[in-house]
Length: 208
Image (cartoon, rainbow, N blue to C red; front, side, top):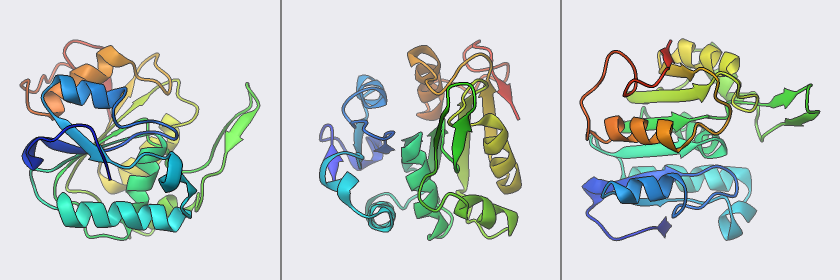
């Protein structure tokens, strides 16, 4: 398992970056600057070459063996969130704190730019949610940009509403939510700032 620094496990977050992302950069740097270590899986190198089911099984085993507790923190971005959700689908409801940023929940496309992507088992999450068979994490929140064509907010809301997961749609932002917004979310999520019912540190956002 990849790891950024060596800190106690109660200040170590399990981090699944997006496709091609690294644990020590981006959000991983944000965790480190707040005194948290990051462990997790990167979709690069040997892990990326594994079959999809083996990737999912590896993440599920990581969660069971090292992070299966109420005070655990799991953060996943984009395709990393897709991997987490598939791992969660074969586990009991995760007892810790889960933060999903711009999660992929199935296939997506954009007519405007002529691009699309069909991930492995693209319909599985929706089918489980529709059949009330998805084991929803006990403490989970999602943040997605209103202009995100990859983590389409309509699809995210449809999936999350069936599971009772809180979703914050951020006006004007796309797949990259930006350092300022993500930083403010991390501060609250890691317990370093009190919850602000008027919004996320006065940044414009809409909870659904």
